[in-house]
Every structure is written in structure tokens, then in C-alpha cells.
Image (tube, rainbow, N blue to C red; front, side, top):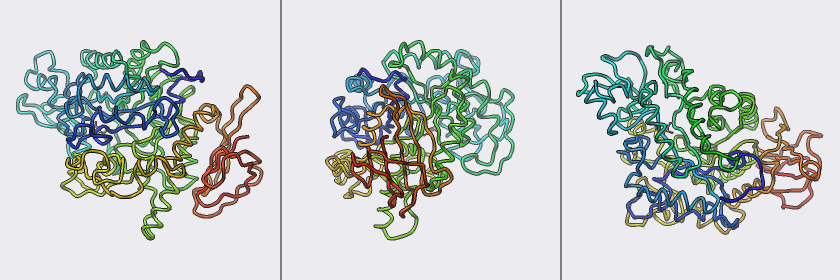
Length: 553
Ligand code: GLC
């Protein structure tokens, strides 16, 4: 592993990049991405030599690649200790981890421990033998005990099993039965999975829906709540966020800490706390950060394009975090529409909408990569990938198959490596698992790789700057321009060997020239900017439309 100059834990300094393995790169021509495809493209992500053509990310989060019937694209696991043949072999996983480590890239993998696939041998045993040792590994009831809902099916979460003549709980799709985390044997089996992958050398885990692990011991019905998305008209007090869940986070932390000796080899736990309530998500860090290292902060996913909205979301997250916890931010993931599309104006000519979307993507990238906290990128955002329009029959997401307008597949399209018919994702005679559209645009790696003014070039600039400037990673953050709807800004401040280092970040969300409030910014040297040259001295009184200006002081 590369030695770092920073003494902070590596995951606080890192830029993470999420790979949805079905969609990154197909190495064997079956139209589905795989682990060898990721290995082939590692130099693009970080070649370990600080090559300017590499993106420069520090860590990967790889969505599930375990053995699975793929009813929920791999979030339904039938063997936690094997790789699905669609993605390769366990040796490919081993090779991927060591190839990443050789380049200084850390790898966290996505463990789905709230539920298994209904094809998992544990569930098969539980269904067919109530008195056997797995009889109590899932949640069974003679009749539907409450009103809980299956998120991907939009109906009752209790499903009839003929063999056992009872209902089991599955709160995503019927093929994803919930395990009984109150059973110590289940816990031990799950912890064994965790150890298996730690022994294999992974650097941590993204823990799927960690806040759903424990259910109310009396299986009470949730009260009614006037909110359709994401709550499905229920206040989820009995099927999520039960207080005992934090004990599990602490147990997981204890295990992963045993594999961590220095800040440089921490095994990091990043939990998906499935909620739109930042305070609930933040609580999963525990007291003094003894539970998860990071609970995903989804605040940026819901904000409209408005500087004040982002300002408040950032402040809200910082305020919600318990003492000692470290922030994180993300703009897109595999469950959400891509932010490039979210922030495209709804009206105007095609050219205008595309131009504004690109300008906003630059502003958004600078926000994500300079705010205090660990940034998580989603594959393809660095080249401006957009939602892909899909016909009903093309949808594979179980949610989208029920309600096509809700499909998550629109943000899961194959990575666009070039402008060819299959975007260089798979051979042209192998239809990709989801359609590639639109071909022939600039939103591909080949078109941007050698262009420093491209969006990809901008991401590379920002990531490099972040790496060079400890203040951008660890420095304190003081908001500037409070209350402005147009300009979001902050000062990052850090003592260094020669005194202090201040970096001022100014982001114009508006498509017009916007004056800066008096007295908040004085002279600085441009470290990076969309409209000014690096190295130039600047004393800005205003920002140009969608200008990003990062000044060193
Ligand atoms: C998480 C995943 C999502 C999946 C669900 C069930 O929310 O991000 O993709 O469908 O869990 O595992």
C-alpha cells in the first residue's frame, strides 16, 4: 500500500468511487460487466503513478458481486463467500483486490446482511424444517401480523410459504427474506462472512440497509404517515431504526477494529442508513464514533439547485453528527437518478439544457470535492453520464418492473468508454444488459481523456488539488456568503508548517454574474477555476455565470 503523508485515517482523506459491476466493463462478451473488466480499467481510475490521465481516486466501493439469482441485481445473495459466475470467480476477486492495492486503491465491498436470497440454503432449510437448526433464522408468522410493506413490490411484506405453511417477512421483494438478527447463531454466521472477506484483504464494507436489521420484538404495525416517498405512508418506527441495531454496529466495529492496527490500515464500515432523516443517519456513528465509521449522508440527493439549499444541507449534516464523527457527501448512487440529469433545466432548447447541465455538473463536482468530508463518486459522473431513457420491457429493476417511472435502472446504464454503439462497454455483437444511450456524444472517456477542459479533466484537477492540499481534506470549514441563493462558499483553514493555509471556495449556482458579499474574500492565488487561470492573482468582487473559483491564501 502507498505510504501517505497524512496522519488522518485513510478513509477521511480518500475519494471513493462506486462501481456497479454489471455496468462498468464487460471483459468476456456476455453483455454484463464483471470483475476482470474492472481489473482491465484500473489504470483509468488510478494507475498508482500519479499519471495525469488517471482519475486519481483512492478507494472503490463495489456493489455486490456474490452468488445470486439476481432478482435485485445482486442485492439478493445466495452465497456470501462466492462470486457469481456472471461476474467471475473468487480468484478474480482476489486478483482485483491485490491489483487495486498495488496501485494504492483501497477496496470496500457491499455486504447485504439484512436479508438473503430466498435461494440461500439457510432460507431453504428454514422453510422446510421449522424445528431444524435454521428454523428460527428468518422471521416467520402464522398469519400476517402487521402492515409492513415490501418496498420493491409495494404490497404487504409478509409472504406465504407452502412448505412451512407460514408467512415470512421480506421488506424489499419476496425473493429477499429478512434474517432474524436477534438469533445469536445468525449473528455469528454473518460475522463469519465479515471475517472471511477481511481475511481476503478488503479494506472495509458498505453495509446495505443497516438500519433495518432489527425489527420490533412485538412486530407492531407502523402508524400512518402522510408521506409517499420514501416512506410509503408509514412512520417506520417498528420495522426500522430499532435501538438494538446500534449494538450490531458496535459488534461489527469490534470485529473490523481487530483487523486495523494503524490509521493506514483501518477497516472502514460505511452504512447505508435508509432514511431521508439526517439526524437518524448521523446517530449510527454511535457515541464518540464507536459504531459506524461513516453513515451515508444522503442530504445532497434531495436538494434542488439552489446555493442556500446546499448550504443548509451541509450545516444540517455537520450539526447532526455526534462529537468525533467524520462527515461524508454524495451526489448520486445506484438507487437514484443521476445528478447530471437531476440538475438539467426542465425547459429550453436541447443545447441550452445541455450547456447548463454541464456547467452545473462542474459546480457540483467542486462542491463535493472541496467540502469537509469524504466524497463518494458514482461511476460515470466524471464524464457527465445522464439518466438513460428505458422502454418498459428493458427494465430489470424489480421496482421499475412494477412502476416504470420509479425504475432505478435509468442511473445504472453501462459506463460510456467511447462513442461506439455499445460505448466500449462490451463488444458490439453482445447486447449490453441495459441499453447504451445516447451513443455518439461527448459523454465518454475517450472523448475527454486528453482534454483538460472536459468534465473528466475538471474532476482530475479537483481530485489532484485535494490530494495536494491537506486543508481541503482536514481543514476546518467556515461558511461564507451565508443566506445567498446564488453563491455557496467556504473557507478551509488549516495550520501548516509555515503558519496556516487558507483555501477559499466560491461556487456560483446562478447563470448570471453575481456580486460577492463585501469583505468576505480578499486576494488569493487561483488554485483551480472554471473561468480563471491557475496561478493568477485574484481579488474577486463578483463571479461569472456558474463560475467556480478556488483560491489559496
Ligand atoms: C439497498 C440497495 C438497493 C437494494 C436494497 C435491497 O437500498 O442500495 O439497491 O435494492 O438495499 O437490498
